[in-house]
Length: 145
Image 1 (tube, rainbow, N blue to C red):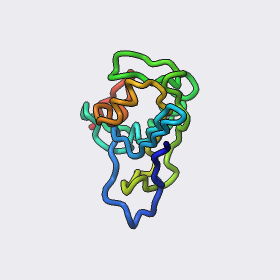
Image 2: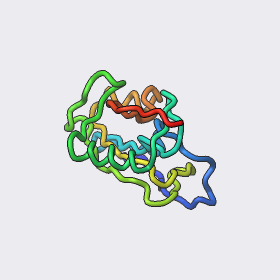
Image 3: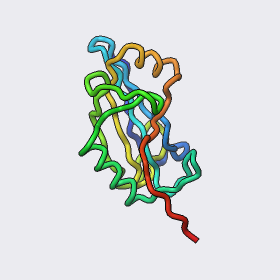
């Protein structure tokens, strides 16, 4: 059975801005054996968990490089998952502010959708153990005065 809601709505109905690391939309399809998860990976001009701020231009560059070079999901920054278990099915830069499940997504945010086939991961998503996205990678940091 497919469990779904219409994820996109008007900004008038939105509650608050979505942060990175937040699954905004989940759709279970038990008949086909997958779960879709959608949410922002990076949000421009927002402080991340390391205290860094990333510009919209840097986000766009990172998103394009990821799609071009990798498209692989990882689990908790330690195990890389195969593209057969968790393929990337959508990746876009929000061209304007938009709303997904009553959460506003800032213009310039990198939003992804993964199709999760792995049963253990599907269970972790369903019970809230996995509840968002986090970028893993390396960058150079520049102090700005």
